Length: 80
Image (cartoon, rainbow, N blue to C red; front, side, top):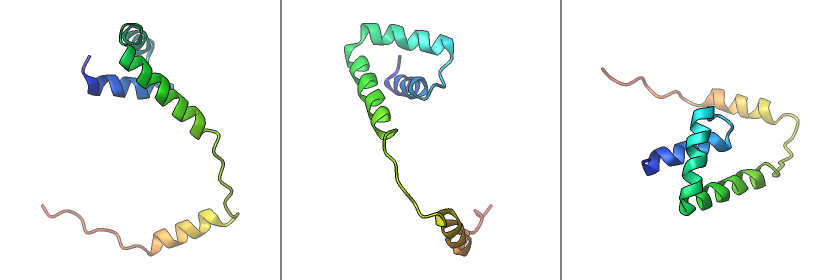
């Protein structure tokens, strides 16, 4: 399995988006590749830790952000 494909599959699995076949393929890979297993476990821990982070924002936060966004100039469409 190419390293890039392996990383994509790890992310899909952690995000709960991997199919059953992909999950099986990843599980087999992790059983035989200690480096991939360590990367998987490390990323899984990062996701778990970041899920604990809570940020309190003011009640009008979304309204203010949307208001500022509307003020921004849109980029010109690409020239053909």
